[in-house]
Length: 430
Length: 174
Ligand SMILES: N[C@@H](CCC(=O)N[C@@H](CS)C(=O)NCC(=O)O)C(=O)O
Image: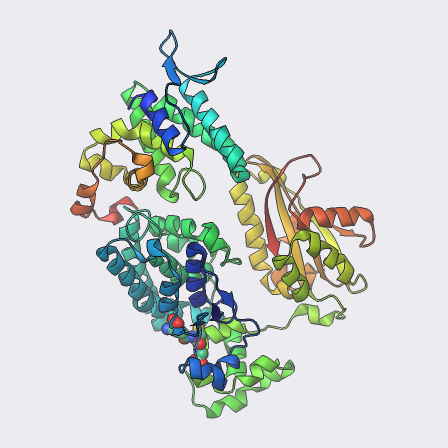
């Protein structure tokens, strides 16, 4: 079966997670280009709405609307046992769409730079979210899951509906009264079936603020069809000219037809990339990351050394300087996750594998990093300077056997630290 | 629930043949024959033995080993304590531990859930609706584990429906 979607679409996640639980085999359509593929005659014949996600079955049947697709891909347990449970599943699906969806968008989108910030809208959205979370809390304080005593599609769909909120705006302070919702969210997030689909999620540490610059950039790129008369579009296109627009972006000429929000998630507004100042070599991070994610390390590591371009890129070893502060291993993992989140804009031209060795009260953190350029990359951007000074950095000689060993160890999450502590957990920056 | 019943239920859940293997030492401590000349003595030791057997089949959870052991000891020393104070302290502790967790260890059922569930049965049966309500997180977890037939077996059912009927204001627990 073929699922049409762009990457990291939370609506497609519902279907993909359901399929993980039921064991149904679904492929994400390769080469799908948002705003292009879904506007072709062929696609529109199958899915007149032209929206994604959309599903094509093996025997040529078509489904649109993410909830129906997720339902179709579910098994009996996910759909609910009794008639009442089935109805309750439906109840939470509708809840996610109507109570959670619009309010979540109203709060998160301005922060992502997709919508203008408006104080009244923002406050109303927050109130609506509080109400929705109270509803969830009331159920989850007495029950492990949303329907019955098993995971159902209701959990998957509401979880997906909360992803953006919990990633960008619902900080620990805000989540605090909703401890049962947080407990449940973590449980769903950490099911192996979810983890196979949702790979780059970090819980919000601090509510992101509206950034007018981000918004302007987005406006410049995609026009403000939803907020502004079309005329103004031309004028605003200028700032975008400083970067050659990608082919993908060129094609999107009818912004009023796009789901503005998700479109922007796909093509997140680009602030100037500090790595642009450095010469571009032959090593392609995207290609490597793809190989690394899809292949065994026995393939991806040789691939890395074959393609690595030591003239324009460098390999580093970074070790956390204050291991005695690492008490609980889960906190240490948060430390790495937080740093990765803050370094988000570095991802395009960097890759790292950070490992936690040891156990509670006796652990160390270290990692192998690769990025463009020969110098320490962090000083390139003020955004990147929060964490790096708590690490000791050492540049590695790309040709040495020792480096090969270290890279192999860290990329494959094996071995021990220098004092013999066993590998505990790893995180990949990609 | 006697330790013998509890061990038998854990064994049933694991589909581990146990018939005729359990007996008591002269000091009235439970023991299990594992073959003609090997015996394991004591509640926690027998459970650890089961745990090791599970690990052999499913070695992805090795790191839970010490945590699981801790829960066996906790069940043995606190929940099964003859002191009422210990028992209530155990409930309080579990209740706050479970505030942020759906399972005792990690994100799926482990032997720790089974053992604590069985050991708690006597106490839970005696709690008033109001007490159950005050151990909110513990009650949520307990009723979930109880809903799994392969775990519950013939364990006496604890009724939680009153909590839901009373519709307690959750805000009171924040
Ligand atoms: N209710 C639909 C919404 C689908 C939707 O809005 N999809 C957007 C992207 S997330 C889309 O494909 N927009 C393309 C367009 O409008 O041309 C669902 O849940 O599947």
